[in-house]
Image 1 (cartoon, protein in one colour):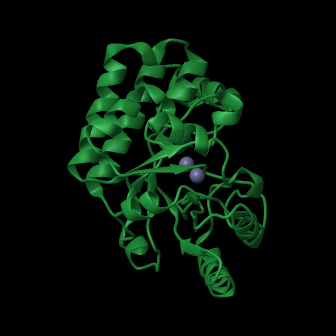
Image 2 (cartoon, helix red, strand yellow; image 1 turned 60 degrees about the vertical axis):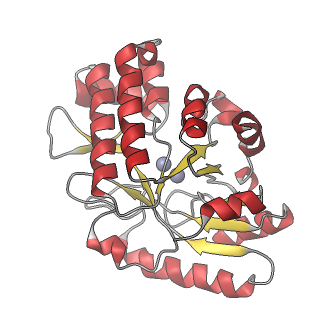
Length: 268
Ligand SMILES: [Zn+2]
Ligand SMILES: [Zn+2]
């Protein structure tokens, strides 16, 4: 595995979470690389949403995986004297398919991010619902798929996350409390309950048991003033001496450094 601790000690200008046109990114991969070089980044990793066992407009198809590696390798050799580039994936976990699946073990990835974006529908448990999108869409899905039971949705998200952590097969845990944002949009104050903090803590301890690298995801900072994990959990990162990466989860080249410096300042 890459020595993330060493990399972050040597350079503040890195980003290991960025999307591509093979998933839901909005620019050619080379544009991200040029922007990163222009901003004097030393390390940059691509992490398209992984293929799933079902169709999803945000995730790359299995058919485009080879093309993705061809493009990363082309960029790696073209810009090798200017920046360190890496091939990764943000791998989704569902009960049937996830980072621990041998499909991913066999791919030539430099590192792997494990993230939960889908939970099973309460109407039909074989159907997975994306609970990661914008709050307006999430609220609508709460009616359609989850009987408006926000506590059960939160519990399901943390249960899925815990199962992913226990199954393994990845290096970095992506935005580990992300459900908190949409849950607050549905019911303000819901994440200020003691049971909520307990769920986060239980997951955090499982993450620490396996010493995964933790991402502080800054994608939403500029627009929503929210980091994932929330700033209120930053003290845990220090207390447990975690290896932390501050990633902007960029879908556009001009967002590669978005919110990162603010997070780093708060992390001290
Ligand atoms: Zn994600
Ligand atoms: Zn992402």
